[in-house]
Length: 294
Image (cartoon, rainbow, N blue to C red; front, top):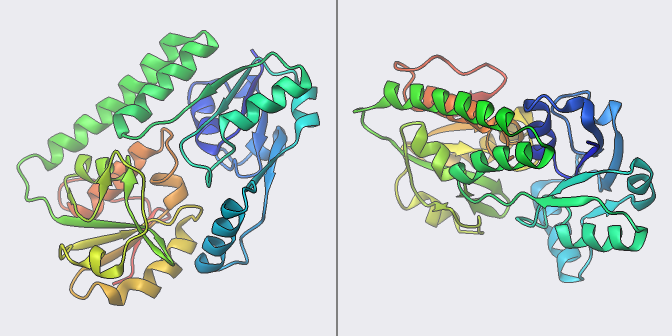
């Protein structure tokens, strides 16, 4: 089966299922594994925001969406030339990827008969379910079951290690200018790691809040996990906002790698967060995944 992924998390799922050779198209943001966007055809492009500040990115996104514009560009001719059987996309967040409706319109225009599977998880449990959905759609359901079973075993090990321990209050900052609190599956990661998520929206969309709202529950630990950034960018942003949480331990986390993309590496994120919250109970996180700034 010829597969096309229109979001980075789906690309990670495909590779985790051992289906990398079947993947023929990806997005310009697919960087895990690193060879994904160099060895596959890039069918979705977008603006390079690396030189922009978080406030500038937020302003650009708001302007585009208010005008009814798209943040991503589907290279329709390239997509048609790949003759895909299955396209993986989402409707969860217009800021993260092309909505499935745009893909359906393009396929109709091109006369392409590919199936479109939209992956739209809101909780950690939903995320695990999407792995089985992809495996089933490709015809290898056993691979999905095996992948999920292995990830559940890792979650169980963390749960056993932190059982009975005090749960520190944890606030997660998903964006810093303006501030956004944690939503979707992110609070579940904190809970699975042995923490108590505060100022959070488990199972709901992340929303803009004030710094006062984030600080009001007096979090003991603050995790800065900006969407679209790996550890270096997270460190810069965590340092910029650390002063807003006096008395709290402020940590930067590789947001794209461990927290905000709903793929298999979310379990790495649970393990990394557990190492921050309970360093004497679980193994230390890899040095390129987390960094304390205050």
